[in-house]
Image 1 (cartoon, one colour):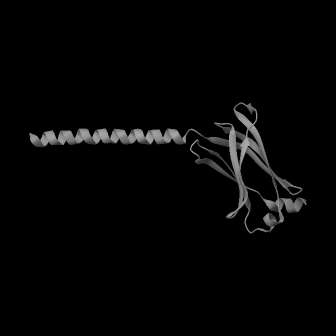
Image 2: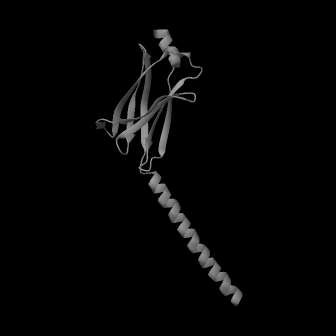
Image 3: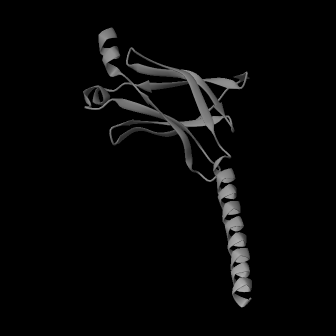
Length: 140
């Protein structure tokens, strides 16, 4: 009889612990979901020494961030971009980047990273947009 009682108590304690763990996971998920961003119709044009990246974005706080890297080299530090008026939930955005001779001489393609940040500062929904500099050399 004592064995059954101990077994029953152990089951109750384990059930209570698992409920607390699930609650903690749900709370952590809710905190990270406070920010999100989606991008669509992203187009990259390189002409006259300028790379123009245009597209549409949907962000929970009407801002997105971007940075430009080439390999492990940071070419443009993180920049906050305020989104404009929305049409059906989507806002147009444009990013212009000057194409330098260092970028053209690099072994790797420059990559623009678009993303958002949570209120806690964590990066979410990173999107990597390569900038094909070969096209600019054909035009120039």
